[in-house]
Image (cartoon, rainbow, N blue to C red; front, top):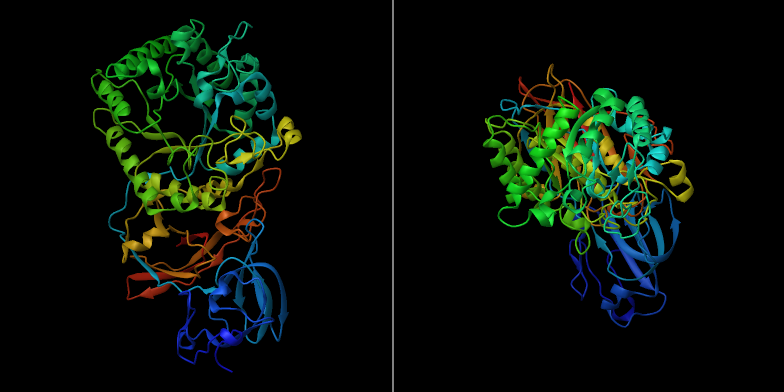
Length: 622
């Protein structure tokens, strides 16, 4: 039996010939070594072959397949019945709103499937060509511990009500311990837009009208109030986790209200120092000052710099030897460069880090999975990193370049994108990219509120959230989908980045490869991020020329078993090395699997990684 028939208006094909519908859809011929023979016949005749694209009729599809060769058949179905003969097939992945999608992978031979089709043709995924990369062992970059992420949250999480809930929460502390590990000092930055809408008082003063929970709100709800009780709760968090705090003091209300002046900011920092001790890692004056109206125009950056100097002087008198982050700009460009130039004009710099924020656009009218994982976003991130790194590394400044707030898209993130599994892969990818380009710390912006709620309680990009209101009020926060990307970044560790050369630069469009050599010894970590869609692509071999001899290798994979693949927005089915994060924030651990290492000559070796679509693979070599 060879060929395909569709009622009286169908057509036949023959061995070795491509199968092609009238609508232009082409199926691989038998020569491809994938399909030996197949036949489709409807219960009722189709008027034309092109109606298969929207076939509301039930089709009997009889497949006779050779031993598993990696082919995938995709389609869209509303219902199905699987009737296996012999070993059958593995039917995976169904979902996508009301219309379900499926992927049929052949296990061995002679299997039958009955489906009701809707919306789109059946297609065969082609096996992509291998990705070939070469590592340059002779050109290692400087040592970096910057792959592992830090976290940023808004200052309203430090108000009296929220601080008592979340900074005393055992679950919150455990999530940060899981993310931070015991082998590195991480930082929690408290700032964001809430830094300009919160009010510090150490003397129980009335809360001013502008100190609201929701930025821009005119309702005085008192939830913008931070007191010594807030800092006591924060101290409990620091003691439980070892995370240092980067604290933002309010600058925006300086003109609007005399209550928020440099003296108040100094009092806030002194109180934080008394409570946190060395746990107070740094202080920022204001948040995104380039968006303040008062600092607009050509003289704006200079006015800001003058105000910044006043605040710094007052803080230093109240809390000597404080470390200072520049108040990070919303955009990486002219305002940041003006601050840099003003710093160079001083007898000696008065900041300890040059900082900026980075998002890939505002999510209000922008953002998609295809954009987030695109080469354009990849290249844009490189350009942004190089802008700030080149200035921070100036010999007359010579301070770390820091992204103290970043994530996929600003404006609370994009639903079904910023909280998708694609975003988890991007979190790992971008953490590696920024560290490779010289960023020395980066902070993933997050929130504690109810999952799916609106800002300011929740951002779609958040590493964690509360499953419902009861959990939110109890501080029972859980890991969200992007958390797994951050956790994978933590497991990558530290070292020296090695240059990676792609034989075909176009492979970067969907595949990212990084290599990090240990600071001492022969250890090497290689990371492969595969953004291809399982609905249209099969596994891809990534060949890595390692540039020196290695004796052994093992790997773990970040993946999801969800039918939604890259679009999955729940943690169910996500694993990292087979492990997952519990509702109490504990990671069950990763199981490393041996990877063959192939000697090449007497002084080199290589590995071949079979990278599945929508996965990230971390390989450790020795």
